[in-house]
Length: 251
Image (tube, rainbow, N blue to C red):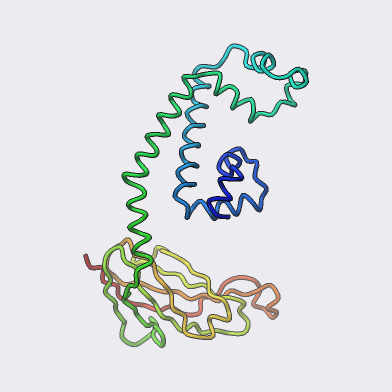
């Protein structure tokens, strides 16, 4: 879905009213994360509806059902309350209360100002960094583990990613693998799955920035058994190797 299709299909309004088919909803969700206009419309409309709901809760109308029935065509007003569309009723109540519109528009304005002054410049800077080529510090853990030999080390800048290359001891009995990074305190910082096909070669992991201190880190490799692996292995994970390294976080 592109922006023109989203506008033509009123995707923002239908998304918030839960009127999109599942496949269209998925397509719109993929689109609006990359579309500044749709993201602004979505957040502004959400703010409008939230403010409207708050105003209705604070100042409920005397007889909303009777007011709606009076304004609706006879064929609809004669219907039972359960047959009335709740979403249409909600929008009708909004337009019957001018104060709601003013409050909601003010909320939308604040949202748009915040986005344009703070959010979007930061996002644009992040996107520009992602699109620019960058030389990342890399550390090869192939052939190295915590059971012997010298401990490799790497220096990284604070809030910057780095690369880890690891040789996974693959075995036919495992259907996939998992690599997880442990902090010096033993906390699991992240996990990444590795397919059996990828494990046949040297695996390079794009490690996210470490929000922590310099110290002794461990990359733990686990083999994940599949249900049809046979034998006495069963279903579960088995630790295959631990790769230790020293990480120095620099300003």
